[in-house]
Length: 421
Image (cartoon, rainbow, N blue to C red; front, side, top):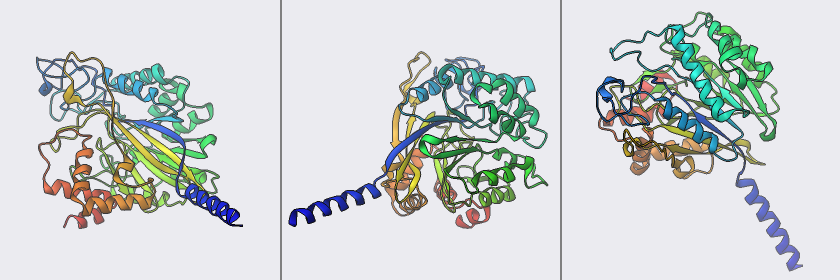
């Protein structure tokens, strides 16, 4: 009798442990915001955007400049080498942040845009041919710069049917050509991945009279209603405010429309790029995660740049939580250790999300990490250091730190600015 009771207790204990501890069922690797500097020259003067002169510009990049092609190639090659990855995601922004050394020169031609998209496609085909790759364009990937609107389908169609056609399934091309949005189901891990076009609502774009530009949200709701899978949303521009420079990422109504459409219990998270930095937002029902950029050049004059990043997210499962975002590993290239002649990249693990002392990436865990950042100075210092992917900073102030924290807590403009008071 005692033996039977003991066995029953052990079985119950194992069941409880299994219900609490997630089993990893899949992973996806993200790289974003490359901002290809096709005129980059190692050993040049960083003050010239690493184009000319003599200076310290390293072979793999400099924090004053956008990414040379060899850095982008190395990052995608490293992502391809990661084990047990179900799919990869590139979240956009290929054109450099400035056309020339002139401060306000943001004028690019269609030829320059299409050449950059084609070059990025070549890098991905070189390392990821035959693999699942989910794709988004960035707010920079348009001419005139930032102007994604109902007339942008000329570019979306060329990307879907020409430059990146190898990475789309036949039934996905027409959807991307219509509005740069599409989806794919990953049956093995029970996940529907939806790429949305948030560039339409960028704060650098003009507000649209039509709140459902290109019919995106009607299409989106048709995919999330009664979906048999959990849902992961990918895009370029996140909602919220750029904590480093106090600028909203989307115009207010656009962010509101986005978040209203995200209010679905099946959505396990949103993953974006755009900010170049490492941060997250505590959303209404799930976490929102920003993957840092490959380009080491950040938004001047607020920061000193950031180290290039490749991040791998892990998907977990428990009977209680079901399929959910479980953890991420952040890999980076420490540019301070490279010079003009250092041509072998050594991508290293910087940290894991679970290093914050949580077991998953659910909304409850995101709230716990936010609370630790707000109440524990060591955690706050770590968060600020990781925000630039370990890149040394000279311009951090208490005000900027507060901006960073308020941006995690509030996606809505009015709540963010109230937080700063």
